[in-house]
Amino acid sequence: MIERILVPLDGSMTAEAILPQVRRVLHQNRSEIILVRAVNEAPVVGTMEDGDAALEAAREYLYGQKEKLESAEVRVKAVVRHGAPIDVILKTVGEEKATMVAVATHGASGISRLLLGSVAEGILRRSPVPVLVVRPFWSYELWGSTGGERLPLRNLLVPVEGTDISTVSLPGAIELAKLFGMSILLLRVLEADKRPSVTAEEHAEAVKQLKALARTVEKAGVEALTLVDVGDPARQILDSIRTRGIDLIAMTTRGREGLSRLVVGSVTERVLRSASVPLLVTRYSDQILKTDVVSHRGQGTTSAPRGRAC
Image 1 (cartoon, rainbow, N blue to C red):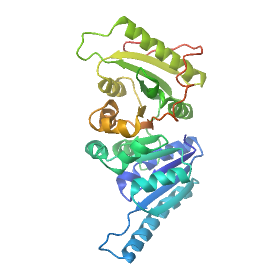
Image 2: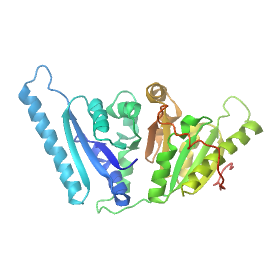
Image 3: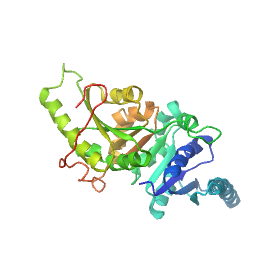
Image 4: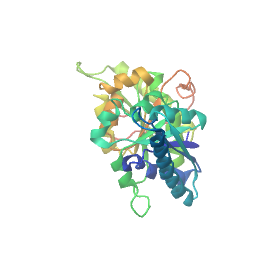
């Protein structure tokens, strides 16, 4: 997943906030970085010279970023093209065989705009590969002016539902957990809205599901913790960041239709809008679903942190 990381840049400091996180991955793995910058065609009222000048300015900027990374012995490629940003980015993902896209949002207030038609929203909706989403303030705290690592990555949260779809993000989560030596917390939140409590049967089924997933995680050599909570899923996920020391969240979206629901208030949207840690977002499709991830076979044990545990 992290062999070839595509990083869209638009010349802003906000977009560049993703670079500290990418550098962190590079410290653990010899990934190749693909920097991409899209330049919209010159407007009708403009001239061909205007378009050429914009392309040259974009190329100069991107190659400047490329030189900085190369000076740190990073394998990097720069791609500058005319066209709509989303189309250019997604086309480059295919042409360069990128395995992940890494992008920064515009922070707390900007995330609403991000989910209502921005470039990042289009990437989340259509990307065939996982998308690492980082809010700028998190990156600034992560990497100081000296370039030293400040915040360790210890715990990765993977929220799951009662369907196989929500486990699509698990392979990427396992890969990152192995890379950074993280533990994975598998969280299942049983919604109790408009009813007094969940049934014993519901809780038992959730425990069974998480234990099966934990066996898959542990077979890959990663410590797995399991937790069943009751309440509002988004609220419980966000609360886990603070109470259980979560450093990264891996979640699944449902593509085009799913992101429309995401915009109007789904669990993923609410987590994206408020999370204080990076998110690895994987788009679900029938081709992506890994049957081995959701298999209920195998052996293993699990342990549980604070809360209503399995």
